[in-house]
Amino acid sequence: MTFFGVRRLDAAFVRGPAALLPTLASLCLFASAFAQTKPTTAASGPAMAETRPVSRPIVRFVALDIYVDSKDRPLAAYQFELTAVGAPFAIVGVEGGVHQAFVEPPYYDPAALSKNRIILAAFNTGKDLPTGKTRIARIHARVIGEKDPSYAVKLVVAATADGSRIPATATIAPGEKP
Figure (cartoon, rainbow, N blue to C red):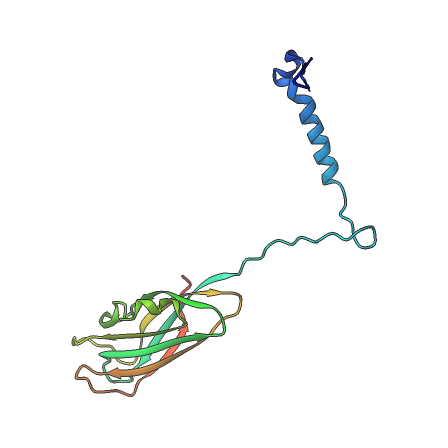
């Protein structure tokens, strides 16, 4: 039977789940035959474009500990600059130090968190101040790629509670894994 030039199948054949079996069987055969074909190479036929999985950059998170060694002088204030070069690097967080005087995170410009450079500073006018080598901050950063950046820390100033400068040094070391 035709309807506007289109052949109409018998209604009993079209209805029911059994009507789908021939179609599904054909699709399965076609799919298995297609999956078993070998791609052609330059030796066996026309060259086909080789597809490779898209590689995504490796993203890692690192922690960097900043130490100031004030020798035998009490450390009441500091300012340092941290820079990273050689790999994409973004600061994602800043923690304070281990001594009670610097347990709060140091002051910094939040806009600098996405740069490869940040300046941090803190002060405490209390009586219980650290002497010697003390971790004053922990920096959490995101590094993209397998290559590690080169880090540098520059101590701009270190001072005692009365504001006098002290000859201190700053160092950087890998922190605990985040």
